[in-house]
Image (cartoon, rainbow, N blue to C red; front, side):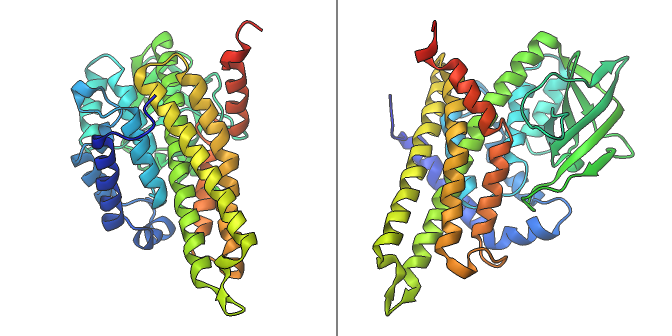
Length: 362
C-alpha cells in the first residue's frame, strides 16, 4: 500500500491550500456563514468549478482525479472550515454521472461547470440521519413527500430525491421550494425540510438508485472523514500557536509538561484519523472489496477522535477558547455536525463490525 501522496496529489494539496487561504480564509468567510442567507459564497464555488473541483469524483476520462485526490481536497477544506455544500455537490455530480438519459447528462454538465447547484435529498426521519427506506413517492411525473436535513436545499437549482420508486430529479419550481429552515448546532449550516408536491423526472430505477445511494453514502463518509482530518489538524495548530505565545509565571504555557502531553494526545488522534481516512480512500481508488468496511472504520473513528481534538483545543485556549470571536468553536461545531451526517458514528461502528473481515464466517 502507498502511504504517501504521489507528486500530483501533493501538488494538488499545495495548490488547494493556497487557493483556499487566499480566496476563502476563515477570517473572511465567517461573515458569510454568520450573516448571509445563502451561507456560502457562490462566486468561490464558481471558481472551484472552473478549476475542475466539482468533478473530482468523476472518472478519469471525464476529468476526475479519484478518491485519494478527493480526500486531499476535503482535508484542505476542513482546515479553513470551508462553508457551503461542496461535499454534497461533488456527490451529486458523481450520482448524475451514473444516471442514464438526457436529463441527467444535461444537469451533470451544468453542475460540474458551476452553472447549477444540485444536492441529494434523502433523509426523512428528523431524529436520525442514517440510511433508511424512502417513503417519498414518485408517480405520474410528480414527487410527493417530505425530506429533512437537506443541506443548503433552499439554494439548490435541482434536487436528487430518493423515492420508493427510484431516484428522481426535481428542478426548482417557479415559486421556489416549500422549505422550513432547521436550526442546528453549526450556525454555518443551512439545513432545511422540503415538502414536495412537484414535477420531477425519474433518472434511476429502484435497483440502480440503490447502488447509487450506497456509493454516495460510502463516498460521503469518506469525504466527511477527510474533512474532519483537516478540522482536527487546524484546531491542533491553533492550540499549539496559542500555548506557545500565552505566558504564565514568566514562561509560555506550552512549556508545561501536562499541556505538552495533551497536545501529543491530540496529535496521535489526528494522525490516526488521517491514516484511517486515507486508507479508505486508497481502498476506494483501487476497487478493494474492503472499501465499504474501511470507509465505515474511518467515519466511526473520526467522530470521537475529532471531538476530543477540537474540544481540547478550546480547553487549551482557556477562558477565551469558547468565545465567539475566537475560531475553535467553529471547528468543534463543524466536526460534531459532520459526525452525525453521512452516517452517524453508531451506524458506521455497527456497519464496520458487520463487514469486518475477521468476522466473516463466524
